[in-house]
Image (cartoon, rainbow, N blue to C red; front, side):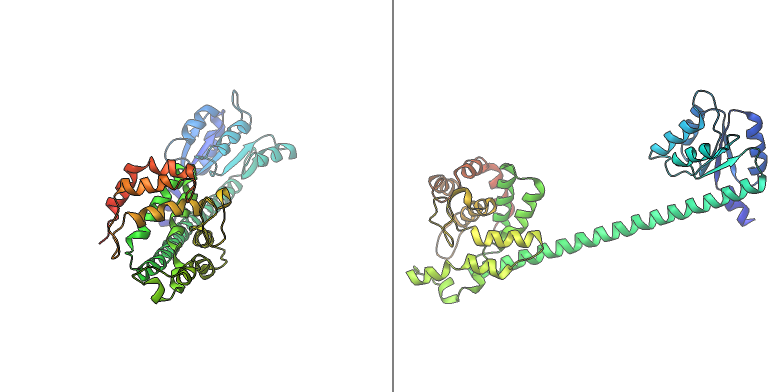
Length: 352
């Protein structure tokens, strides 16, 4: 009883323009499967595209208007029906006819007049194969979703580790962790408005927090000195970009590679008077030029034990004055035009 009920859950669509042929097949199959029938290709499409679709299709070849080959071709080209097993049942039984059917995606080819045991056995086999394919596809989909979720979790964890490393460097410099949150979002905003693609801008935002990681290698008595640095002390400070690049090292990760580049180049100046390599103009990587503006702007507008926060207007005015000297003039013009968006970021990531 259980086995028969399970079989009857499967539906078979019989497509044949001769009603007598449909009746013969119905007589063979009726006690095993739910039967649907179509006497034309057009009606076959309507039934096949309905919900739920048939589990298997028995398809005649020689039909008026739309023959069986055309029906098969269209069903195999449509995502809704491409996975339904199609068994041709035809009096055309030459090798060429069978090969044509298989080339169109048919699962089997039976010759008329049909043998009931053969028809039942072939249908049972192809329904079992179809069920296995569906099960495998479901398992692949589930596993793919699990792997995707796991990869996202690992990526988020990696990004968070990078962000915390950046914060560690900022805390050594008596700055709050909010500095890297703000400046990384300034860089993202400026990158997008400069024509950088969304994925590349996201990568820049995640890499920018590593810009000052090299400060970990600067002695406290220099990094935390409240007064003016001597020439020798400033020379040591100027080593932190190269230190940062070396700390990150050469990595296969895109975000770490970009982080090393930013660490090495965010203190270069447009006029060539920056450090550590005195790069000039467009010779400074775009990521370094963008990060330099976001970093300096946030440093100016943030309160520190040794200074008060500048107003947004005053900070932007200084950046404008330094366009073509310290900063890329094209990027400065874009950044200044983003005053409203910058204000939103400042409000969202206030020092605590």
